[in-house]
Length: 206
Image (cartoon, rainbow, N blue to C red):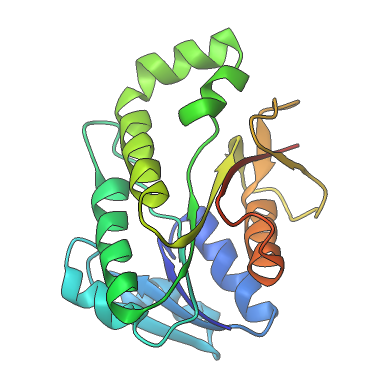
């Protein structure tokens, strides 16, 4: 399968690139700095651009079978890169007639808010309110896109090795509030083959 991955240099994006290549997919990684993925070697195409630039997004999506979006930002201030970038991705996918989109969001967005503990609700509402707003607007755009979409909401992300053992479901509660980025990538790539999560927003957690 031909895949374009946005947010390819982030923690989850890097896992998606690595595991997609291991599974034999043809991967196009959308990056601002090509050197950031040089170590991944053969089998990887690099599309250089800015997700805010529609023309470069369109070039990266042309001819692909599916798009994976793991956009994010370490900036806790007002920042809508997920929403604005995803809007361009959706527009470009429609133009290129690419239907399959999977987006990495976060546990606590939308109806999954009720699955959080009171402590986690307070933490997110106070410290990550701008991130929550960005994720929520991003999810709304995805749901209204008319594409064959899936939304994956990880609990607290870690850099632990892939286990292949995790809980997945709509509005499930987290036992540990932790999930490896490698396991998030594992779920997303499995679902590209199975399609069980199309039209669903699911939580993944340990």
